[in-house]
Image (tube, rainbow over all chains, first blue to last red; front, side):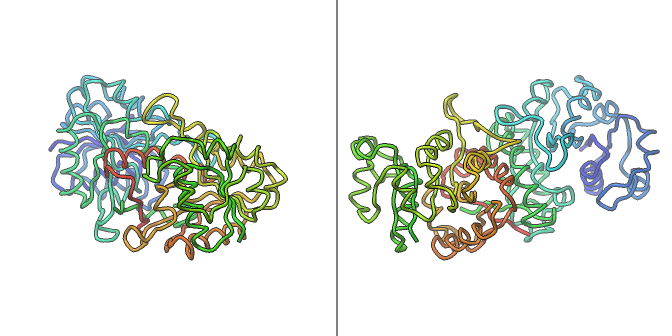
Length: 228
Length: 228
């Protein structure tokens, strides 16, 4: 497939690198290509600056948000949650219309210090706001409940025997995403939570995830398995 | 121990019945004893009216909130989350001072229909509001992430190999609660999430729990196991 991943951070790098390795024609979209390649800040996951990462991943084509989305059949939103609506507007409504839009972002607000709060929650969610702003896109929420490297390689923990959630209003779009999760990323247990209102719960899980990461587990390399 | 459980609903019944069966001197606290015993509404869990339940559980002593809390060393808040602060005020600040106060409630607001929203979240939690209103109590948040019958018998699922969270500002209080969870209720995996701010995440997990209960699992008899 032709896939765009929006966002040059740890999540965008992990997703685009893996999707390209799986043989997909993969674009990584950013606001300003030259500025991203000139950015001297190293990512916290050890992948270095964006230019260093791209040198090791030349199969991922770097483009503007609009070019990346325009070229793609499937678009992953891997931008920071509080910047996602802006990034998607820059991608162009016409470049998202009719397409599968996989939202993996979390609306974490770090402006008031740690731990972050959510900029939207409870009676709304980022995924629903994105669907509302781009009604012709087929938004599916998934992958926001695990750290970047686990998203694309579930087998790193317990042979992949733990749970990934999906939510969205379009059944076919969810089926396509579920296939990518299973066949591409190694997720054996994909749990369909229904329509996009379930994204509220998936995003509101983040404070618990952060507590586990900082206190209970003291590592981002964990997930939950639903036990019945 | 002498234990008070506040609340006559499914959670209060499950907790008080189990604690009494474990040999603890157990009071169940309610706003109006006569009104509770006269209530003709049957609980959704099949335990019948409160009077029917109490007939089968005569070892649990029914009392007012204040009498129950006054008699106890440990108090469980099993009232509806949106009514908890009122119920605890009726219990009397002097009856809670210095005591372990185990908060298992969720601030679910059903007034706007299903799914419920949370009446407090994100930058605050019910548990923190309770701690703020009763600063001399030792508040520990736990058990709010599973259905009532699972709270007191973790072995009903996967031989107890799934996760219960605890959070609170007092280490000794958390240790006492953890012992009740392990020895009394069969929880093998108790994960300490740190101070009471972690109650935000534990309470904000409820929308995800509700989505799983209604759509993903279609039963309340499930839990998550943290996989590392």
